[in-house]
Amino acid sequence: MLHRSRRALCAGIAALLLALAGHTPPASAQVAPAAQADAFTVSGVKVDVTTANPNAGRDQAIGEAQRKAWDTLYQRLVPGGRAPKLSDNDIARLVAGFEIDEEKLAANRYVGSMTVRFRPQAVRDQLGGSGAAYIEPPGQPLVVLPVTVVDGRPVLWEDRTPWRSAWEVRERGSSLVPLVVPEGEMEDLQAIGAQDAVNGAADPLAAIARRYSAGGVVVARAALPASGEPTRGQPLAVDVVRYGLDGSREQFPVSVRVDGDDRPSDALARGVTFVAAALDEAWKRDNAAVTGGEQTVAVAVPVGRLEDWIETRKRLATVQAVTRTDLLALSRVEALVALTFRGDVERLRQAMARRDLGLTQAAPRVDAGVVPAPALELRALPRGAGLSQPAASLPAPAPAAVPMAAPAEPGTMMGAPPRDLGTIPARRY
Image 1: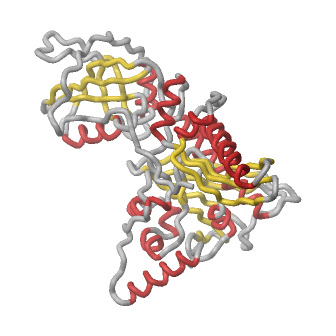
Image 2: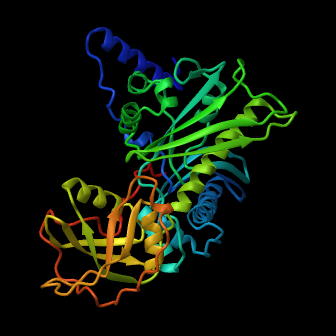
Image 3: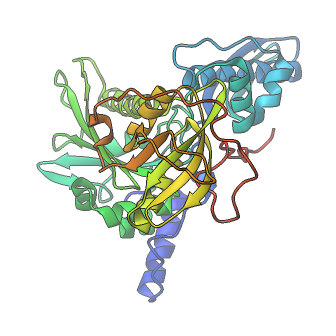
C-alpha cells in the first residue's frame, strides 16, 4: 500500500483496524481543504539578497518574494501579458499570507524559498481594473490518479511506482489548474481501483472526486517497462483523460522526449510538468474571462421537462462571460430570463457552445405581454455537440432591451452574480 508520510501511514493503519472491527469508514469521507492546492498560490519562489544584517535580509527577501510571486501569478492568469509595476504596498494588499519553506542566514546574506498566497477577489479586482483579459482559475481542484501500466496490468495503489512518486514530489501552487494527488489511504482504495480508473467508471470517479471536494478527475496513464522507469532514447507516452462531474470527458496524449543521458526521475518529472501544462492549456482555451462593459438581453429557454431547466441552469452557471441571470417568467414550456453578460453576443455564443449550450436568434413574437420579447433563444445541447454547431450571425441586443427591476423572488434566481470565492486560509508569518 502506498503512503507519502508517516501521518498518512498511521491514518491508513487506523482505518484498517476500524474496518476489521466492523467500523468501515465511508468512501465519501472528505479530505480537509488544507490538503488542496489553489491557483492563487505561488510556490517555490527563490530569493537571494545581500544585506547588512540577517533580520533586514529576511524583510527584504519577503518583499522580493512577493514581487516575484505577483509576476508569476499575473503570467499564469494573463497569458502572454507582463505584470504591471505595482508598489510594494499595493502588492502587499493582494497577499493573503506567505510561508518560508527554506532559509539560510549568513552575516550579510539571506537565501530562501517561499510560498506566497494571494487573495482571489483582490487579484480579480486588480486585473479587472487594468482591463486585462484574464483566465478565471477553477474553483475546485482536479484529482490526479497516476496509473502505471506494466505488462498490461494497471497499477494505482498497490506499489510505489516511479510515475506516482514523480507526482507526489510536484510542488503545489505551480500551475493554473489546482491538482491534488491522493495519498493512498484506506478511503482512497475504497473509492476507486486501478481498473475502474482506466475504464473511466462513473461511480468510482465521482466517489474519489467527492472525497477531495474536486471538480473532476484526471487519469494519467503511463505504459512503462517492468522496472517502472522510462527507456532511454524512447519517448514517454502518457494517455491523459479528464473526467468532469457533469459526465464530460476529454482525452489528449502527452509525449515526452527521453534523451540518452536523462535520469529516469528527470524524464518522469518532465512528464508530470507536461501533463499539468496540457491541463492548463485546456482550461485557458475554455475559460477566458471577458472584460468590458455589461449588457442585458431577454433570452427564451424552452423547457419540456424540469430536468431540462435544471441542466440549463447548471451549465449556464459555468459560463464566465455571464455575470447575472434573473428569472422573469416561467411556464410549462418556456422560461424567460434576463441575461447580463460582458463582451459581445458572438463571444457569448462561443463561450456557451463550449458548455454545450446553443444560443440562436429568437423567432419574432406578436404579443409579448407584460414581459419583454426575447431577442435570443438558449437550448441545452447533447454533450459534445456545442462546438460542432454551425456558427450563426446573432444580432447585438439593444442596451435598454431589458429594464432590470428588483431581483425575482427567493428561489427563482438562476446562475449567480460575479463569482467571489473568498480568500485563501493561510498561515501568516
